[in-house]
Image (cartoon, rainbow, N blue to C red; front, top):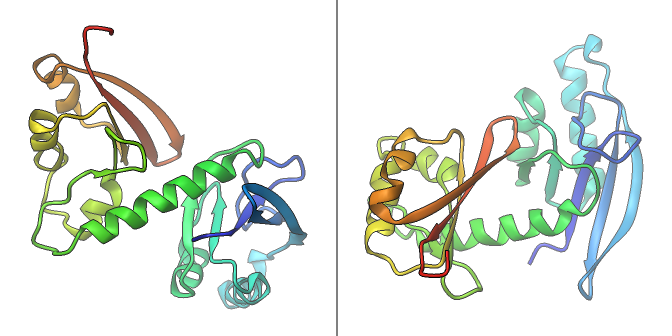
Length: 211
């Protein structure tokens, strides 16, 4: 289980990137609590070229040691490539405080469960049940990276039509228009929010006599 998470922050503790002279804050989870174990400044001079940037990020990887989860506002180019090659879980998320740590941990747990449930590349990805009965989760961005020819509708519609669920959380790169068009037919309630520059979270509930 993930016990260490590195956050990229500005001096106020809000989400930042590796190219903004940011702080790297490493947290360790022990007995249900997050403890700050390291806080150091990370500086990159892009004007020195991408080779120098790569060296700096490789040095960061070495310093983070056993921590293999990093979260910040945005990752791209050489930063993403070096971290990905080193086996990091790379989380793009906007945050204001370290309260985001539990959300990141839950996201990682759910994605691990989803990967375990995808036994075959030929099988259409399905939402997986979380630790709470009746609650499900699927990251469509990751699912469609693996199977780009499968539409969000093909993945979600069978579940929404046939499964007896209470709540479904879905991570999208964009909100598909078909789901709003079908919500009355499917007897569902939808709530969506933006969680980063290119990610949206949609929560879907089955309508009951109480809502």
